[in-house]
Length: 162
Image 1: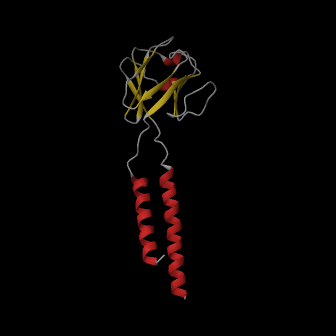
Image 2: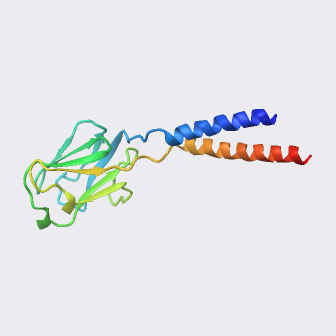
Image 3: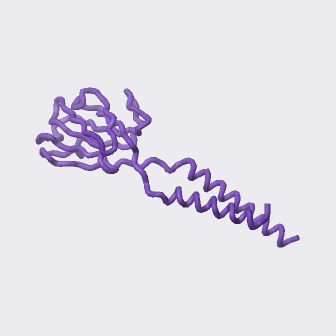
């Protein structure tokens, strides 16, 4: 393969890798939420929240909450006044869309402790949800670009020393 073709191939691969790497960040299409170590305001259930989809009301022993996945954040809305400081420690675990929570599972991507919940009716707490990792394809393209770049340098070096 000629050096010109090798350089063109390397440039195209680098451009593709940069497009993947610099593409706008995407959000998860859905997330799982579940109460962890708690007072059963979700009645021992987990919920799959769709991105910008319908919300879910949690009720139980404590003041009710409403959960939704809006933008890139989990929104927790208090539906009534409450005093979380009077309860035992608990929280909400957020899990990736492909990993529903199970008993004893601590592989959540975010955890919101009870003291961070909204305290007055209508108050909203917004918790950013981590963006999924970059595509494996971007890493593959970057690896190929690196190898092609090395091959180009070696090719030029051999040609210059011949």
